[in-house]
Image (cartoon, rainbow, N blue to C red; front, side):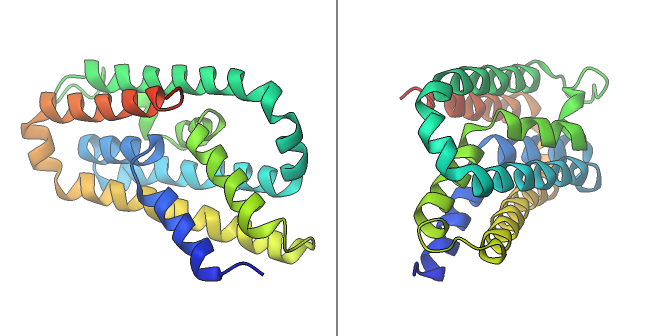
Length: 194
């Protein structure tokens, strides 16, 4: 039986460290404010729920087929993350129409999960290490999906809150803040190959 503390520690580390979800939540909140960025965070919750459910239900199968699928998913994920980085980098202060508008919606939060390798690795690692070897019934899997998804949602909301609290600072240093966020997303994409 795995340690619940280890499971929760892993979930928190994966959910609160920089990654595409958190950087995009920060960017949305610094541009649109906390209330509007919560739509993106809710999309993250729905997308992560779907990914975690898939990892729980098809964990063993995914591991068997992962070597065939992994390079393509990595390339698509890196391309999507770089597209988001470019959108953040090219935006102008106060120009919300040209701002990378899709980032503040529910659909954007959901779609990000389809191409978010960190989220997929989060689910596959959590289930293969902490859940599937010890439990094979529905209830522990369902609870694990819910816990992992809620922790990811809280992580994204925390980063959004940070963006909202420091909104004035981030807006007054718009070019530098966007450059840093774009570079962090580029780092996320590059780290898929390093």
